Length: 252
Ligand SMILES: Cc1cc2nc3c(=O)[nH]c(=O)nc-3n(C[C@H](O)[C@H](O)[C@H](O)COP(=O)(O)OP(=O)(O)OC[C@H]3O[C@@H](n4cnc5c(N)ncnc54)[C@H](O)[C@@H]3O)c2cc1C
Ligand code: FES
Image (cartoon, rainbow, N blue to C red; front, top):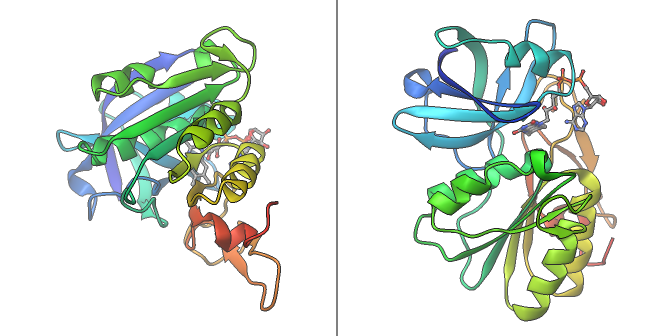
């Protein structure tokens, strides 16, 4: 389908958010689902929904290569060729305290989650390499949430990793749950911490993809070790997985 760009924002250097007219979208996306976007070359690029409002959907991305550079060059009024919403998103908030843990470009789908559950009481823990890459902090503020922040270089918030913030939160909320999205090393550490704390966790992966619809197997990841180990396709079985699907009951 083709969706028209109705607004273009630059939330930080090297980051662009495009708001698209959602009237051509077959159904309302769920947080954690993604759009598979044609970017001028052969392969589409997967991008999470960053928000839904006033009949528009957002994608917020960091420019890292040819595909995202092509997208960043698009203007209001142009159409994008997209497939979606694709994949399985995050579940509704479970009972009890809930933390959203976002790293870098893993932050946008978690803002969309907070937007979808306006009455949920949420802790928001965000981390990025530096101040510039810490996106959507003001959007969380407008939703009435005050994220705990950290950066690798200490340029904003606490110096350190977002998993340091999570370790502190888990010790204060022994019956809490976690929804996380970010780079694979961050998600591995979230899996380890939440397993140790006996807290449920759902993890949103940003694996490289090909077809986006389960046909090419470019995105497979191994399921939890053990009898009958399976392989999961991140595009259709994920990109959001309950932790135990990938890590089992033992800490990674
Ligand atoms: C389900 C899903 C949701 C995503 N949501 C977002 C989002 O909301 N915002 C966002 O900025 N990005 C998101 N990504 C990542 C995004 O798809 C890639 O950054 C994009 O495909 C890069 O395309 P490119 O052509 O610009 O870069 P390429 O030329 O393909 O790659 C440039 C550099 O980035 C690295 N790279 C490319 N893709 C990935 C990846 N998936 N993970 C780690 N490194 C990668 C390459 O190894 C290379 O070093 C998501 C990925 C998935 C699977
Ligand atoms: S990207 Fe083709 S099977 Fe997942």
